[in-house]
Length: 192
Image 1 (cartoon, rainbow, N blue to C red):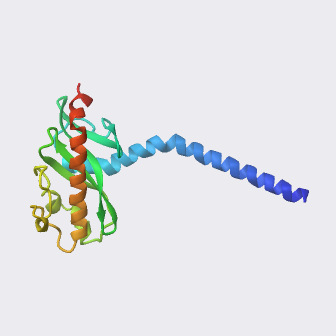
Image 2 (cartoon, rainbow, N blue to C red):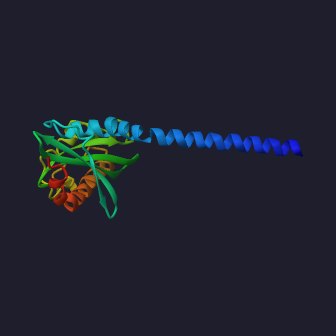
């Protein structure tokens, strides 16, 4: 009986130390992991949206607290002047959520473009949302009436991938609503 209690005590001690070690390592590396995700997931999407900026949007990002939760906003700055912003929203795709980075002009009247951050869409069909032919439809588009053609808009859906196309448009429209909530805060946030 004593030996069984000793084994339980030793195993409990080993489990406790292992848990403490894992928690410490996670806490110590969480900032670096977040920075890597931002750099290698959101970064390429930002490069698809903005072409003319001289800052690092990932490093210059700011978080805005909204009633639905925080939103991380990435600025494009040229010669010390804010030229555009972008943030990520999600739409419902065939294979799960589609992460869409949506870029706006500073006045919010037009889109700078979109970039895809994450998706699990069907290769050859829904995965075509990453192709420039689809994404460029959003570049320079006015922020009013963004819909697929079958819904009265002017965005051509990808043939055979209506769910992916609809999810993308839904994410863009969600981003427009959020932009309208934060647009008054933007100029003061990145003043030099």
